[in-house]
Image (cartoon, rainbow, N blue to C red; front, top):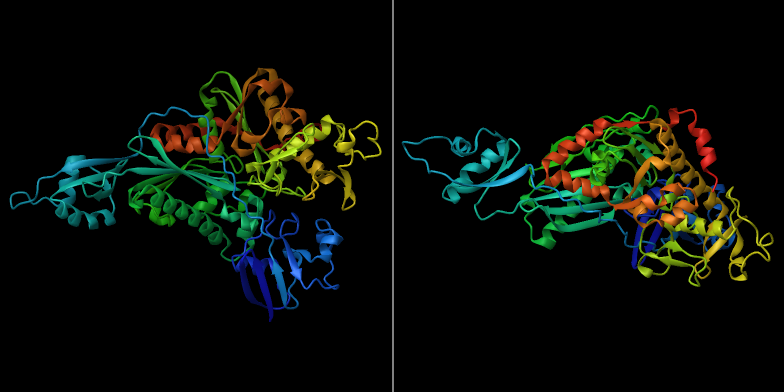
Length: 600
């Protein structure tokens, strides 16, 4: 056994470790989170730690050489996923945790108030020898026939008699879900958008339809991989993997409930419903339903219809007889979040053709109108979320999100904090700027300083350097944050997949881009990206430049619409049935389109 002392910020933990155990696994087991995008499989290079003593025999592995320079290695930098514990060591985890900037707002849509849950005040006649009706019948004689569970019936006699037979009955659709004292008139619901990277939640007063509070966090499942494939792999290969993933997300839901309850002085038992949207994998993992087959052809999910489950069955700490309501999905890769965004955009009700883009690790694309809609999911890779980018990071405080090479400052960060890395919108910006300055050509090749001598301002020329054997452009000399030739190639792959998917859908409907009247950009990336930059790199056709509407968190807005008004929940199922799905891997011409669209 060896002793591993782990230092993170002000905390220090000592762990006894068996010989040759992978350091990544040890840290994960002890709840020590490392930034990562690949769940310890050595492909992202983000799980950097400092190992002391930095002995000569601790040579970098082949994988590590892709991400760590010799100079950094001499200081003890290693990847936790590549280190086998073979002696006592001190491991320092560099503090990179920053507050995530989660998009909560969206274009507002007026929604009629018609929730599934209501509270009805009742003044009941007390029983006597001439009226010996049972307590439940006495209640339902005033309300009509209702399904009633055992727990509510158990509670009923005490509540009736403690309150002189004046009570509030809580009814959800055709079910009696609670009976409470007459002064407990709170009636709340929650809407939650589970993103692969972030979670957004909304507390809503169901008596008025008004938003009471919002909540945002990083998805705790990210410690098991940045993308859905990594997480599905964890589910398949790890004992209790499915339960572990589910427990992480349910735990975050319960933290959200506690936050809302504490901040707003809301009794959590007065929260009777949560509507949930997310991609298809996230929806399966929340419900504890196997997601195995989503990862492999023919990519078949266990279910796509709407699902309503008692909160107690889910382990979520709202009223135990309340419900968790999951909106329907279209396919394995077009989820409830896309259905909700379609609903929030209103494109389903218009005769004009609209395009919806929600760009992340996968790019969900929907094209059409009220007559017909087709969709696809383009495997863009994680570049748009900062993954597989040398200094990439998520949309956190300190992420470089804006680049302008004509400005003396060159870049701006989220929150105007010290730069931590580059997020997706920053990558698009820097690529656009490098193209405009001629530093990157249409094939994506970065030019050397010698090639650009006399053609480029010396201020920018000196920023072209070599990094780990490849050309790179320095954004911040002080921190060493730069963009490499490999990063540009990653962006080309991502934008090529999205643009090719868009073209396939347009051909499917026999449309030209001139036929499209509106382009909705949904999600965080779509909200923060500069449209000019997206057009300049060829992500969005130039003819659509002036038709872009940044929708914001359309998924969260759609979830709120379904919470506040039952008609919108029913509408979600009709949208699901109307949206056709095109599997790009089954389209022969996709590869040709993909190659064409990789050019800038």
